[in-house]
Length: 118
Length: 110
Image 1 (cartoon, one colour):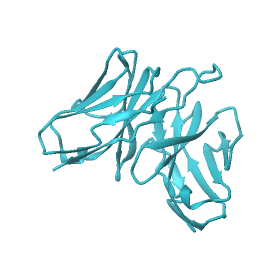
Image 2 (cartoon, chains in turn red, cyan):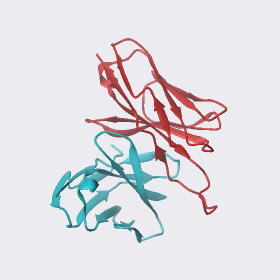
Image 3 (cartoon, each protein chain N blue to C red):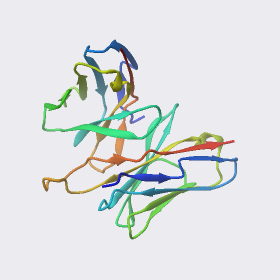
């Protein structure tokens, strides 16, 4: 199976603009999570979607939003960009059932989108 | 902060040596996972250990978990230059929201 894909891989924006990042999960995976990675704060959870519903949300301002489509692809949007939003944004997908039929919590990460805000 | 703490922050060893990284966390967990990241790229899942397990092996990896001390360790045996990367522990508290540790940068020199 193909892995998690994220587009674009690199993005440069200016303060005040908005941005939309895309994530395609592994085929058959219905759970998609988003994380932000910065040198100062490390890896932080943004939100998780399952079957087009947001199931969990991290401590980020309302400028950060997301959605999931019926084919499990997900997008996240950041409005009114700030310099501090510069980060690597990682998407992860998860299948609820592993190869042996047991419940699994393993998340598979994409390569990330590196966003630079000038 | 809910982040787990990892030590050491950086580790430099020679090929063939063992590398040990430690992770401490603050809350109860369902499981703890270890990930590897090469040069700011995506995370690669290494191993998952559940809260009712004490030790787990996968190839050259050995993970231990002590829930009473809220700590875990990752041992990489017979390290190779290709193991050079950052390693993160991640705690799953039951809501599929992974809380990551601060990471250990491992450098394995030939």
